[in-house]
Amino acid sequence: MQHRIHAYFADKETQLIETVSRLVRIDSTIGEAQPGMPFGPGPAAALEEMLKLSAEWGLPGENLEGYVGTVDLNDQETALHILGHLDVVDGGEGWTVTQPFQPKLVDGLLYGRGTDDDKGPMVAALLAMKAVKDLGIPLKKNVRMILGTDEETGFRDIDWYFDRHSHAPYTISPDADFPIINIEKGHYQPTFSASWDQEAALPRVTSLTGGPRLNMVPPKANALVAGLTAEEIQSVIPTLGLEGITFTLTQQEDGVHILAVGQGAHGSTPQEGRNAQTALVALLAALPLADCPSTQTIRTLRDLFPHGDFTGQALGIAQSDELSGHLSLAFTRIDLNGTGFEGRFDSRTPLCANDENTRLVTEAAMGQFGWTVKGEIDPPHHVPADSPFIQTLAKCYEMYSGRKSECLCIGGGTYVHGIPGGVAFGASMPGFVSNLHGPDEKVNVADLLTAAKIFTQVIIELCA
Ligand SMILES: [Zn+2]
Image (cartoon, rainbow, N blue to C red; front, side, top):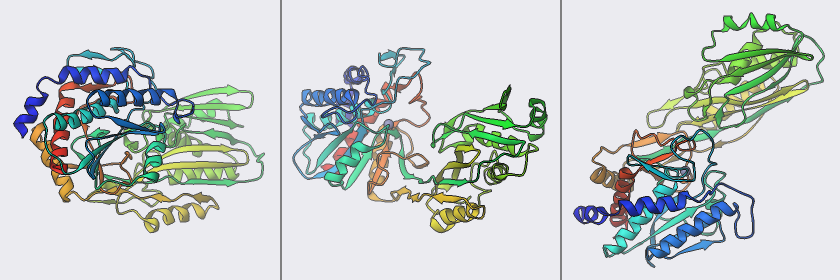
């Protein structure tokens, strides 16, 4: 069988490149809803193109009210769902090889928005379904590909689908990396706040704002301090030992404006960034300010979220387990003014985290200062590594990649989070940097062809 699959794909590289390029040329960024296009014309056009393509390949599919498309391999009972998406994040800036929606092949790498996330992998999976059909391999079960159109902006597509249709016994989502992601940590991202009477004391912080997004380490933060000079603030900075953070002080009519600049990173990997918000809080907390609610709050925030604490140590929720590693924490949102504040952190919780050792600890730590804390833990997703399904995926991966399989845990959440037995499986090979969501996103064509072979074998193993 392995020989037949290799032979089938021997002349498919051009077809793969041309097909992925067809989809990449469609800007499928989310847009305004229109009738039959819940996520706007871009995702709708990409979905139509993919369904047109699958029909050309002898696999007619269906458009389900513009939320998702489905492509079935046969009319038997469904054993396997392949879940991926055709929407993309916007093109962004900084492209050097080509423009985001003009796919270009250079040295075996196909560049363009969506080549890796997730149009390339979806085409590879569809090509695998076509291979099983063309090779005439008899199947006892069906494979259904589900083509999502809202992965980047909220999962409303598959939520809609699974509100109306059942899960399959097995689900893979080629929307990440090989080998196999069998654990996705939980999320705990509470909102905490307090309010007070309008302050008047000086010197004090009259405003503080941090990160733009809950799930991003803040690359910038801003504050306004009344009643101190820029020199007085400047003199404190060297005493703090904050590496990799730049502070810019500007004297304004209503006080000194402070801009802190660090480096952004995904909220699930806070150690990869330099958190401008925790750095700015550290600076403000060290200033000689009046004893008033905003000052007390800032000093408490510094104590609960010290700059450089990525694991919730100070808050008292640091923990880890063997399978899923340690809890990660990034203090990502703050908005403070003369009458109160609201903040949020982004924490990715290991399997061992629960209400008692995480939520209640946080609520107690903050409650003693009179803060209100709201938010529940969104549980982790876990498919045991020794299950027959995972073993099958591992075998197929090793057969065609020539690499050793292993199970991985990530802090991010994929389409399969919450789908019983679902795992993210491919399609980037370990170590390949696709730069998805950034400029010069790319896919390795040879690896994508290998992925198609792996998916072909998976379909045969699970459905024949
Ligand atoms: Zn994706």
